[in-house]
Length: 70
Image (cartoon, rainbow, N blue to C red; front, side, top):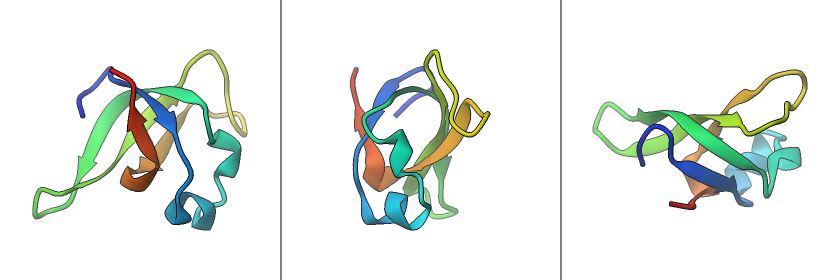
């Protein structure tokens, strides 16, 4: 995953735990991948394309909820 990749938010247990189901099926642009200290991918900060959720465009999306479009 790289900055500017387009992703689609897909269902996951972690997304549900974060109560962010309204973001399901939305396209987003990756602004910053997030890695653990060991180097494993945890998820990314991503920006909604042409819309907001709760007044914000940028959200953390857990790895389990990321489908990379390109």
